[in-house]
Amino acid sequence: MTTIAVLGAGKIGEALLGGLLNGGRRAEELMFTERHEERAAELTQRYGVPAVTVPEAAKRAEVLVVAVKPQDIEPVLDELAPLIGPGSLVVSLCAGLPTALYERRLPEGTPVVRVMPNTPMVVGEAMSVISPGRHATADQLTLVEDLLSCVGSVVRVPEAQQDAVTALSGSGPAYFFFLVEAMIDAGILLGLPRAVAEKLIIQSAVGAATMLSDTGQHPVTLREAVTSPGGTTINAIRELERHGVRAALLAAIEAARDRSVELGKAQQDG
Ligand SMILES: NC(=O)c1ccc[n+]([C@@H]2O[C@H](COP(=O)([O-])OP(=O)(O)OC[C@H]3O[C@@H](n4cnc5c(N)ncnc54)[C@H](OP(=O)(O)O)[C@@H]3O)[C@@H](O)[C@H]2O)c1
Image (cartoon, rainbow, N blue to C red; front, side):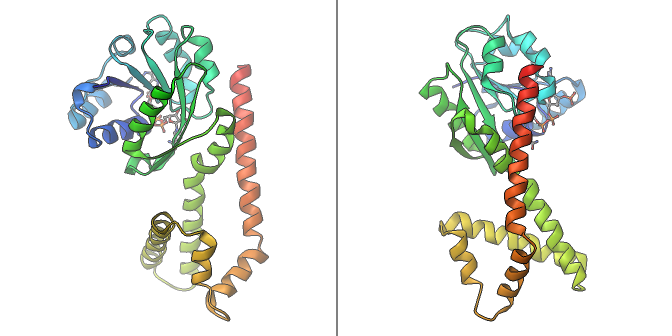
């Protein structure tokens, strides 16, 4: 049994609580902090997990999962710093916050693991990318991997790659939503009812994603299989290339990475 406190039970924090319970953790092992009483009562009723204060969480939990917005981190660190025990592991889900920030503000030697999750955590399909801080051990990294695998897939990278990760999987779902939205518009342009266009494109996205993950085949192989000589798909591909969609994606993801670096610098200077 590992006691786990989720500090900040918003969208991501709640998804993690739900996922941990689904993954077999017992409600007695879990607790959360929440600013609004009404929301806390609602979560306790839904999951049977108690709401606690930050001092209580610091005292009782072996793993402290920080899931507040990055701009709300300061008061949380102020509260934790004098209370955190030597055995506690801090897991940060806050986009862009480096492990060095926690290590600077919390007692010397506090182990920290940084995680970049993404929104599909709410349906148990997150891509969580983890990086250890200076004091996190291999066992602690494995524990974090186990916890997060209740809500999706987990990959380890060195912390220096977290800006690229933010641009790729952190923002990634938004790119797919954007593509789906544009493809539904195309259906409208071709005269299909909106509901039909939505059904066609969403199911095609689910099917394509399942083929990618289940067959393990390269995307080029899968695309070539539906691109017959002189057929319809190659005409569409020609237009995608003519309009620079591949180059646009490269530039867009590079711009997201650059913005992540910029925000990280502002955080360090602030
Ligand atoms: N959503 C995403 O796509 C995504 C992706 C990757 C990473 N993340 C990271 O995940 C973290 C959580 O994001 P989210 O989307 O779940 O945000 P959210 O829905 O705003 O959840 C944050 C929760 O923390 C609460 N909170 C703030 N300060 C607190 C404190 N001192 N004590 C107790 N509770 C406190 C907030 O309460 P109030 O309602 O009062 O503010 C809110 O309920 C963020 O750091 C974000 O960077 C999110």
